Length: 230
Image 1 (tube, rainbow, N blue to C red):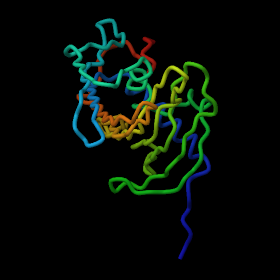
Image 2 (cartoon, rainbow, N blue to C red):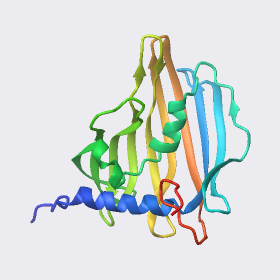
Image 3 (cartoon, helix red, strand yellow):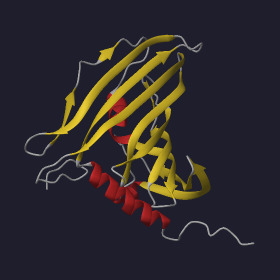
């Protein structure tokens, strides 16, 4: 009989290194991002939706570029999408925990869990502080014990914005990843089904984002994960 070894002492360092490598590699890929936001009443009846599909591609010069596949469809009833919602779709929900983000967050080891037959470490990630205009992630990440890749995350984009005349609330979501080209785990699906407690009454919303058709961009110019040509 023996005791479980527990996480390695340098677990966070290994995760940050692996995530930074994954983010840099993803910066060389084109992919399609499909977004569906549904507004429902509390009985589950749909009251409207927002739908858009974009291809994340490169120009012939190697610059990162978003190309709408078709015109967005929007017929939401009470919900209104904000700049923060669209920032979350692009920045927070496909969150990759890279080295340059470490100063923004504090972490705590939560335990071990098996996800889809993969042994994982679970890490709590919280913002150290939130400055005006920032959108950050707060929640849990599941790290594969095999290669220190993040394969799943659950949480919320923060902060919630609560003013005397303005409410901007955001759902809890889960993002899952899949291994692309046998190397790195990239975001595959983001899903949320949450009731937002507005002062004028609760609203249920469902969110689904699909990241598909990953293809490595073949060109001599290289692009880092911030989309800047090197």
